[in-house]
View (cartoon, rainbow, N blue to C red):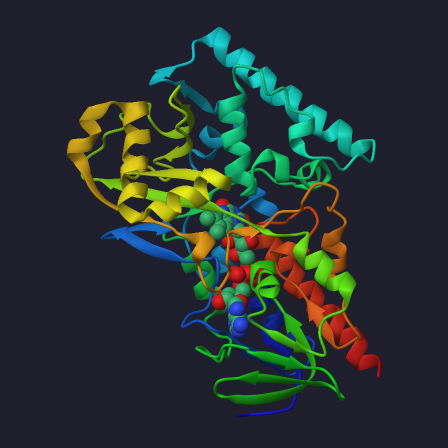
Length: 419
Ligand SMILES: Cc1cc2nc3c(=O)[nH]c(=O)nc-3n(C[C@H](O)[C@H](O)[C@H](O)COP(=O)(O)OP(=O)(O)OC[C@H]3O[C@@H](n4cnc5c(N)ncnc54)[C@H](O)[C@@H]3O)c2cc1C
C-alpha cells in the first residue's frame, strides 16, 4: 500500500473530508482512509420514493446562511428548500396531546414551560454548575412529557444523562434542508477527494517516529494521524492504539458517550397533511407514546418521526416493522386514521447499532462538558482528533464536524511546517 503522507486522515465524514480539502490547500499530503464503502459518514441520503429524498442522518443545515454548506450548495448548484423554514422554528411548533391539538391557552402555557426550562438550564450553566438537566426541570409540569421526548431526541440521551453546560453551549437554529438530501450534498462536495474506501483502520502504532496505521489492505506510514471517528468507535476498541491512549484522553472519550436519535421517514402516496399540515409537531399520549414529527418539510408527502434516548434504543431493538408501525401511529395521532390507507413506504434508521458510528452523536454526561476540549487536544503532537464530538457549540452537527476538520488541518499544518 502507498506510504508516507504528512497526515493519515481516518474517516471520510464531513470532518475528514473538510480536513483533506484544507490539508491540500495548505500544501500538505494526506491519505484518507474510510472503513465503509462510501463517503459522508453520518451524512447519508436515500430515495424514499422515486425522486423523493430522505436523510438517514443529518438533514437540517443548522444556522441558516452561516452554515458553510449553504455556500457549498450554492457553488455546486444544489437546491436548498428555504421557502417555509419559519414553520419549523420553535415559536411555531405545534403540540398534540392524546390526538388533540392544545388550545391557545394550553399552547401558551406549554411554550412558557419550555422557555422557563431553557432559562433554568442556562442559569445553571452561567453559575458554573454542570449538573444533569433532570436536576433543573420541573418534572411534575403537565407539559414535561413532550419536553423530555424533545430533549431525548435532540441530545440522544435522556435528561438525567445530559449536561446543563453542554446543553447551554449548543448553538444554531435548525435552518433548512436540501431537496436531494444533506447527505447527497456532502457526497457531491467530497467527490473530488481521493479516498481509500473499504479500508478499516485496525491499529495505530505511534511507538516510534510518526505513525503506522494498519488496515486489512496493508500498513500506511505517515508523520501524523488525524482521527475523525465517533467516540462510539474510539470507546469500543475497534481501533487499537499502540501504545494505548493516555488516561486523560480515554476519560474524555468515555465521558462523551454516543446518544441515539432514530428517524423514521414515512412516505404517503397522496397529500394526507392538507394545506395547513406542514410544520413541526410534538405528540404525546397518556399511554406513554411520544415523538417529534417533521411534516412535509420540503412540501413533499413525507413525515419524519423522531425518537431518542432509552426509548429510541428500545424501539430500535424491536426491529424495523415495530419502528414503521410506531411512526405510522404517531402520524395518525396528528392527522387521523385515514392516513393509514395512503402509507407508501418507510425508511427507519438504527443508529445505536450502526457499526461505523455506534450511535448518533456524542453527548456530554453531567459534569463533563469540558471533556470536548480534551477530546480535541492532540497527543504527543502526532495524534490529532476532530469530528462533531470535539466541538463545543456546534457539537452534534454536520457543520460543526466540518469546522473541526478544517481547524485540525490548520493546527497540523502550523506544527509540521514549523518543524
Ligand atoms: C439521526 C441523525 C440526525 C442528525 N441530524 C442532524 C441535522 O439535522 N443537522 C446537522 O447538522 N447534524 C445532524 N446530525 C449530526 C451529523 O450528521 C454529524 O454530526 C456529522 O455528520 C458527523 O460527522 P463526522 O465527520 O464527525 O463523523 P462521521 O460522519 O461519523 O464520519 C466518521 C467516518 O469514520 C468512518 N470510520 C469509522 N470507523 C472507522 C475505522 N475503524 N476505519 C476507518 N474509517 C472508520 C465512518 O464510516 C465514517 O464515515 C444527525 C446525525 C444523526 C445520526
